[in-house]
Structure formats: structure tokens, C-alpha cells
Amino acid sequence: DPDSAFATARHLLKDVDIAFCNLETVVADAKYLAPHDHDHHPRTDEWMFDSYVRAGFNVMNLANNPSTWHGLDPFLRCLDVLDKAGIVRGGGGRNLAEARKPAIIERNGTKVAFVCRASVCDPITAAATEDRGGIAYYPVQTFYEPRLRVHHVPGSPPIIHTVPDRGAARAALEEDIRKARKEADVVIVSWHWGVSPTTGGTGELTEYQTEMGHFAIDAGADMVAGHHSHVLQAIEVYKGKPILYSLGNFVHDLHYQKRPNHILLAMLVRCHIQDGKLQRLSFVPGLYKGNGPPDFFQPSQAPEIVKDIQKISARFGTQFEVSKDDVAVTLGEAS
Image (cartoon, rainbow, N blue to C red; front, side, top):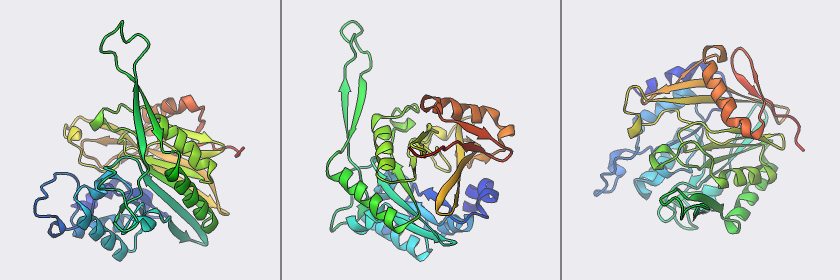
């Protein structure tokens, strides 16, 4: 019953104007798979997609690694499925220009643009080119530095440095944000980044996440929404604008979640936009068991979840205000 995946959040989504999610799957029937494709990674049958629409989602990010795990044909079919359903999509397309194009949705006279990027994917097979479909990829390099006492402590883990592209990819991102800024009232950058537990991640931010989160705001974005790590990461307010480094997990069939006692924290983020500006940002705390979906709570019902998000955000000095229904992030004035 695919509707059950969204049952716990339905009351939070039913009255919203814009509902955004990272579509961490490819929506295409099995007949679009290559004959040799026996990949176990996520794929969703097309009949199930109606559940996403019924839940209220109308804007989706495709710039992520699962979008192209099954190759180009299922990905291109997924584009058709989303278009037929009236979904506004970003981060993926039939060529690079389409993949880079901001996803713009208008409600009540206000336009919101989503500029989408992914740094987690196979850059050879997933990245869109001028004449080939794929996703909007942002390259990042990784370097390992031995610790000062590596000769005294053999086997000690290295210091990991991540360096985002500072040439053409950065210029293209800045161009896309500036274009979106001219077309929309509010610009949100959606970024698939970070390290998930399946590849050794423990929740820490990588260097490029903070560098490029700040860059996106400096280039004109009003907010950055990150995903991929499958765990909650810090919320930073940079120059008065929020950066949510990871939205955590919602519904995903990950192998390490098979254990019934496996628990992850979750949150649903609310953005109140008025007079063409992001006036208030808050989150509803959630708890995710097994394969989900998460249960969502009033803050008074889940004080430990609220404290945990406050704790991981403390390094940035982020301030929160707890109310009856959610936890607001103090945005302050842009400098």
C-alpha cells in the first residue's frame, strides 16, 4: 500500500501550497530496464506514483544518485511520468540545459524557484551533457592528509579534505541562481551531498558542504536544503538565510534499516513565505523506525529530538524558538 508511506505526514501536507521532496528513486516500469539490469537499487513502478501526488507533493529534486542507477532509458521515462503528473521538477533533464533549469512553481502570485545540484553520483554515467540526458552534477575532489602523529600512531585515520570545483561548475551554479533570482521571489538551492552511513558517514559535515552552502547564499539564494546523508545534520543561519545541511530520511528502503529496532531522527520543514520573502522557517520533529515512515510529534512530545537538533546546530550558534506545533529557527536580518 504505497499510500501508507505518506500516511503519517498527510495531516502536515494537506493544506500546503508547495510540497517539495527529493525523489530518491526512478519512477519507471520494469519494461524500461535494460535486459542485463539486475540492480537491486531503488525503482518505483509507475502506478505507485499516484501516491506521491495524492500526498500533495508538487515539486521534486532529481539531482541524486538513484535517478540514474538503472541507466538512461528508465531515467528518461521517469521524466515523462513526472511531467504527465504535473510535477515541477529540477536537477534532471534530457540534456544539460534542462537539468540545470530551475524548477519554478507559482502559488498565490508568489514564485519559488529550486536550483538543484548533486555531488553524490557516478559523474560518468549520471551527469547530463549538452546532448545526453542526466542530472545536474557538481564535482568535488577528495584529499587525505595524514595526522601529525601518524608515525607515532600507525593506522590512525587521516584528515579528509573535500574541495568543490571552483571553475566552470561554480560559475554555472552562480549563473543559475542569478537567473532564478530574476524569475522568482524566493530561491532555494537543493543539494544532494554529504556522506551517508552506507559509506561510512556518521553525521559530520564535509568541508565542501559548508563552503558551497555559503556560496549559494552569497550568490543570491534564500535557503539551502541538503539531502543524501539519511541522518539529520545541522541547521545554520548564514547572513540571515537558513542552510539545512540534511533533511534526514523520510521513506527509504536501506539495508541497515532492516532491523526493527533501528531508529533515525527525522523532520518535516515548514517555510512560511509572505510578501515575496521567507518570513519563518520551522521544523516538525519526527522519529523514524525501521523503513519508516516517520512519526511526527509536537515538540513537547519529543523533547529529545528537539534537543538533538539544537545540539548538532550549536557550532553555528543557531537559535530556536519552541512553540506548540513546531520549532522555529531564528533567522535574523541578512548582513
